[in-house]
Length: 113
Length: 115
Image (cartoon, rainbow over all chains, first blue to last red; front, side, top):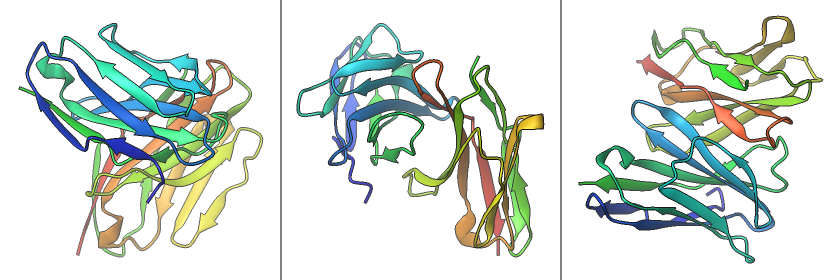
């Protein structure tokens, strides 16, 4: 158990809908990362937060947004969903977010039908 | 630009064979960190090793060893006497100071170890 909790584990929804994925980092970790893993694109970095502030951004679509709350949990919001958004979404955390190993959650499997 | 290339998409070996997974990285930074992660069939991502750019010493951990060569921008991973339980997808990753230390991953190498 990595100590990173992601909910829900599975999510099935329809095109055009909006969903929210939730992540609770390990106790003491201030940095949270979001990744998207699809079959044809490997692990794609979406965004990183440190202590509530955005630290780095990857190729995150404008339809996607995220934030980290004062209690350090993070949410990834995906809107106007398309079939191609179906993927496994991982959250990871680390203490400072500076060159440290990441602890990954078990992921949220999103299926857009 | 920050980039990690794992040219080997899939590798299949027979148990007890040695296997090397290649990783080539690109960075303009002098301060960076390299990692290997394992993703077994169960799906979780497990950290294996971390190396910083100032430490080129190779490392051995049991049947696992890593060869870091800055001259060729490579960070290769060797499994000695492979076992069926080593079957997984292995990811190489890079975190550099420029860009806020975001960690980007290579495409992964799927390793099949047959009994």
